[in-house]
Length: 282
Length: 282
Image (cartoon, one colour):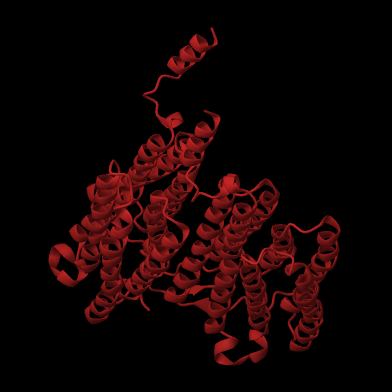
């Protein structure tokens, strides 16, 4: 299994290097501080939603770990040239696209776990959904990897198509089976859960498109431009699908907590209730 | 003590290097974030099960530490060649298999401690089991090490056989003595504890098999292919026997907490119980 030629392109201009480098750093900052925010905000949601926040923070933490590795790897693979404006030529250190697959293998099933967790369904119902969603999502990632590192287009196409089978199954489970549980959610959060579900499918479509770039070939998609667009696309999709998604989970958990327990409703003035107590006591 | 020739093989192809490298990184991510998840989820189990979670997190933390060392050591032992597709030739830095033995010496007894802890037995019963399980498991690891670094097959065989004696004793204690305590566990968790016990024995069998690779010899088991299979086997077995095992302990702790105290049952609506209380009070 030789490293894919599509990943290790020969050189990057100084500005292309800077663009990818800065996007990777943006992802690190987004993931680390979203994870911390979610952990620090646990007290603002009811206990039953805290697991959804911990899982969301775990997803951002795992992504942060991998982007630290990707960032360092990128600097080693494309060291500076003889001047600040010189091209960054590929060193003998491979730019390791596998970090992304290792990351997705762990985070993609967990993104489905946090989605089901925030719905706070009956145990049997949750288990039924997760027994379908988790293995299908892990299979989707595992089938993509042999195609990603393939050196021939035919291998890339075969694994790409195989990987789409569990992807379409996931869409079926999310849009048909999960809908049965969705109608029993409070009406106040139903639109938000539906939006999350749509964003999941739309954002996850970015990955197969980026995966297909080397198939398009040509000067752009087979070269430096395609590399930058692909790394940029993955980075922005990761921020939206993990950090922003985790904040969406948090918003739903907040709304549900407030609806179920007025102690979590910050619109109710704590001093007002105290005044009432004092008035009654008087 | 000369390093075993089976460990320090001369060179690795770029793709074999990448496979081992990526698996090591997968182990780091799995261990770090399982440890954090277990620590952050303590509030979701009854106080008597929190020690089982802390010990499980400790096991994953110790493993993470050793895999950080193994990962860095591996990069130093097999530096990149002249290009990204060149073979990685062994440098003057030994690939140090002893990290694994140091790790196991600490984590294997702790895995048995967390298993007994989650059962929440009577103090005398726990102590009786641990006085047998902990020394036997430490002895099993300690006896394996001289064989691992042996340069002759006969030494490897002698210590391998000696190490199997405490291993079989552990199986006896787990399947005969522990069974007496198992029947007093809630029926809801008995199958889960039995599954954990079987997985422990099945997964721990991976290690003596990998240990025996150099005995098989030949081009594959004595060379690069055997090295990759062995490191890959250890890595995946470690993820399953420590991180996945810790999550299994957590699942048992959750079920037992819920059965013993409705406050840990998230299916019971907190608002519903409050409403009833208020109605009764009126």
